[in-house]
Image (cartoon, rainbow, N blue to C red; front, top):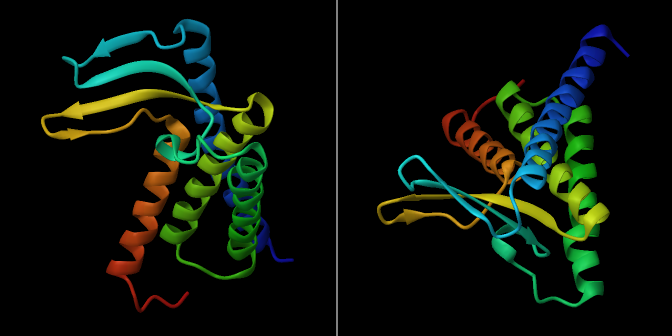
Length: 164
């Protein structure tokens, strides 16, 4: 294994770890300082902090699934996807933007998966509303996943012919 490959693997693990850390740190602060369903309005009501426990996936998708279905679709499938993504990054040469994007998706996925396995639910707490635009309640792992997807798509559309 070359020094370049070792540095690449360390960079991958560092980006993923920082994403997990930011997510878990923010959730810890919220759990310690905001009561369940308590609402704190910030930025002229455009940003709201409301602590909820989400037993489903993004925006509570799958919340009404059976326990076995949840374990398969909300735990097993994400684990497989993250292992495949990590394997892809280590084995395949990709652009720096793709590497960063996939690392953000994996880091966010691990952050939410960690909560789901340990606590049976994921702590969501951010809500944004600007005029007609509004979100569901989400967390920093969701932000990591969305930023990662955005970076991957941006790389795909701007540099389709990229060959590392």
